Image (tube, rainbow, N blue to C red; front, top):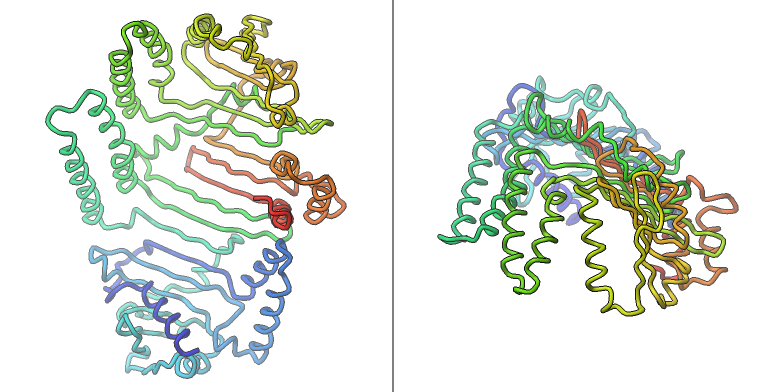
Length: 541
């Protein structure tokens, strides 16, 4: 027992870093907040209940309640108040101040826990702080104030005038189980210069490895990769304002969620790039936006202009190399292919969407997808010529039919495969590939009659985020659990949703947005997790 407590305290001390310096005035670089023991156990009981293991957490909650019945907390720790941590990054990174905030219900019992449970010997100093010798980190310093004990590596960090006030620190309760805030605009400028300088040195070393006479593709590839990695990191370090991460568990809504948000310093390149990601519309998203989708994805984003220029050079160099390396009798075709596809690649933009719909009464699914392109008519002409040239080699395996119908600005074509594998035909039916082409978009569907695609082609562009992924787990069950027997499917659904409908209780979603901030948000309904645990008994992975 003593060894475990000592290890826990040592781990806590490790968070504090080495000998701390006096924190500068202003806000901390890092702030961490964690809900109280009681709240964490309540959330834990809900999560354990999704797996049918809530009784274990209930027992722990009962023990905590009994231990704290006398008002002196659990070993002196108040189970009803949150925990916190602050860190202020200084030029002396190793000596940067770190404070851990632990809620205390009874000081004497807490100190007794350190002595009796952890085998430590707190010694009170003339300044009111306690010093505790701890393995591996030499010593910790404690100060009791505001119903909390503040833990740091130096007594200088525990100046009563500089301690964060718990009422203010925990004042804005947004419901998060835990949160982390990093203020990049408080990082010392000299440290930022050091980091960016190291990146530049690393790039210089990597460039040397290219040799004295790199090919055009190697040179352009290095420029593109270095700008996408080291260049982006440099911009982030220099221009990011703050980064926030939060995790939520909402028992009433039956939902788990997490979010990550990044804001940039006003007027910077990073701020402009984030703003450029917002306010987008997408025709591909409108095309695949049919109701009844089991899974749906949209993506709409573009590279900054300076990176697009570098990408353009890479595409040109790669295209030239592909044509050069092609056999003499195929060089003309290779040149046409790369010339046709190059404008789309050089645009440095993604405008795509896809949806899986179904299952229908026979348990069959359909797929609809769309992609924004440049010079779509040239791509269509290329596809027709390739089908004429290479189609005969496929024999009767595939049948191509072009211009079978027209829908607005789109021309429709079909590709009909012969003798689909039984498992594919079971899921899709006697489906064929429908392809719709226009100057700006190429769309396709896998379905028998093209009805979903034809309906989608009438749609208009719709507002979209940078990325959106949505899945309805219950509707996806027949697809991922093909080996399940019908009664097993019913049992799994009943275990997860009872006798009610799973609608709205089984969704999983991820959304990425731009605009005033860059945000990533993920949500999982509790029913989706319960279904996953229910399927585990049938060994469905």
